[in-house]
Length: 513
Image (cartoon, rainbow, N blue to C red; front, side, top):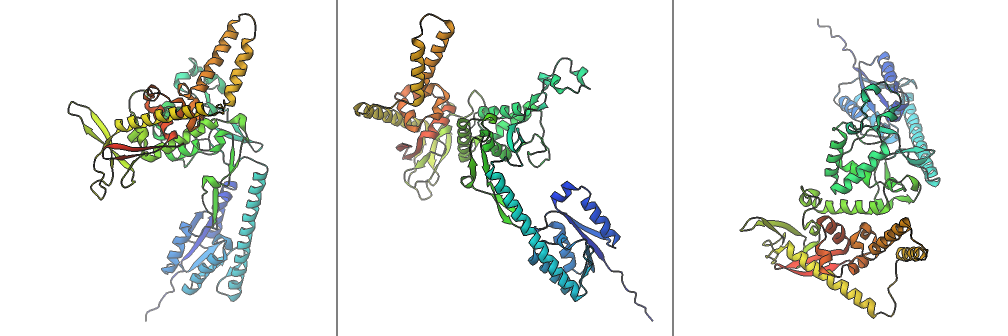
């Protein structure tokens, strides 16, 4: 006679805490696991995620094991550990019932083997879903309240801190370069006064990173310089944040540079809630901006912010590697500004850049239609130098035409407000009697500012000028030909709409005017 012994039941536990619960009580998960083991669970599945997320990895693994018939009973501490939405809870319960797996809930004394237990599960599931909806509603009201009072976000960009719901530059000491350390630094090993170490503040390093970007003209090259200068290595932290760590990826660095907080502004509604704990980035044009919330704590000016966006946009068209100058004082190669501006006159497609060796050494560069010999009859390439010559010729002609129109117009050309103010200040200073070296230096400085306002090509003020003002100032060939590759990228991308080429020649130059 064979006596068949009853096989032992496989009892597992499922523990879940949200990341917020774990942050408040670091032992929350540990306590749950201890209770589940005390109730008889021999194996524990655990997640640290919101209960509104249905794709929790440990829960998916648990349900898979149940479907395969490997589990007889599941123990949880509360019903909302499995799900906070009633549809998801019912889905799990249906699987338990169909396969014959019992669910035991410790805090509510529920057992699925009874009809009363099934009823209680549904009731408690409805309450859990209602509680989640209430929490979401409270969060929405809380965020609206913060927007109404123009409060700073709880997560602030690197270089800042928040005090009384306002952004402030972080001027705490952060890092001391070896080159800046005092000669007696060994004696300061146990010194509590860190100011004696000549350390740089977070604010100073943040501004230096921006200056490095302007010099490098690309995020990748800038980060390389930043990491080399400050002796940083790649680490596994997810992102910059309130942890105070100094670490960036290329994407993270470009997002930081584009953050309106750096300009003294605050932006809300940057992300959209999709439900079930999921969010996605909102389009920038749909953000809610509040300007000048902390103007005295800005890292960059609005003009610098515009230049940053122009650099990032230009690099995204072709990529900084193709256009970068690896040696010399310029960040961009010759003709780099033409990337993204040259189109085929036949098929309207964007042209691609190519190069060929010269007979006597060196190379020449040209644009060709990307569909040449593939349906497009524009087979002849156009040299980049010829494109530049045609562009400059068009600019000079347009400048002279604008000047001629102004001279013929009975309405005199209006001076800018800044020019009027400078001329007024100079006129007042000229009326002061006697000779004073400081006064003469001040007058000379104002005269220089007037010259720069009239001719923006001799200063960085060109970034603040309109397309028409820039073209008016460029009324001769020498002005355009003497521009550096970096200046050409900065200026031509601002004033040129597109250039069309056909059979080796420039067909049309369209300006943004």
